Image (cartoon, rainbow, N blue to C red; front, top):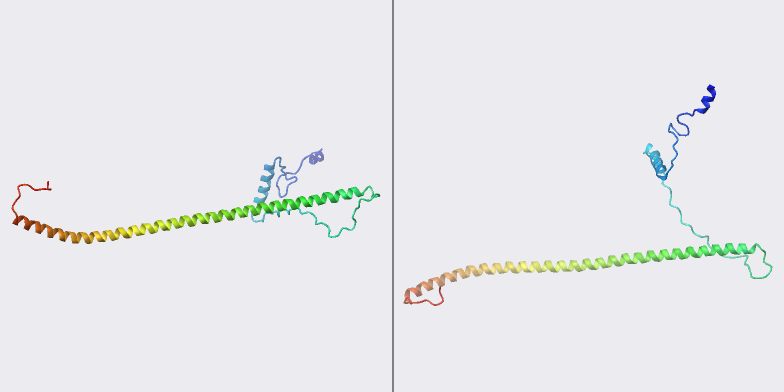
Length: 188
């Protein structure tokens, strides 16, 4: 009886390596989690990164066809299947060439559009740069004109203050010499 009990019992690490229990993923998320857990157990070990799948390319057409099938009577019953296979392969090759040329045309159109956008952006930038430079030059000339007018005003003030003083002295002398009028025009 003890032998039967021993057969029914499974060891604690049944199926797993290194004492890990065997876990079967029921969903894709669990499978991904298990893979990540296995990778994270030993972070120093490099992770396997699969190579990119190579794109399918059709077999090149034969350079020289030795068994050209004619339309003569007497062709065997197996010749139709050979013809059908060759025809299917040629259609696949033509479809592949059409798809690659369409992809190439799309890529060229995209690259042309990117280049056109770059040129347009450069033109807008140049236009705005020119406008900024023009505005900056205008501000500088206005600033210089303002400084020049301030300088002229200061000179005018200094010369006008001396001329005003002279006029005041002349008015005082004229008032002293003249009779005092009974009314004064223009003064309030």
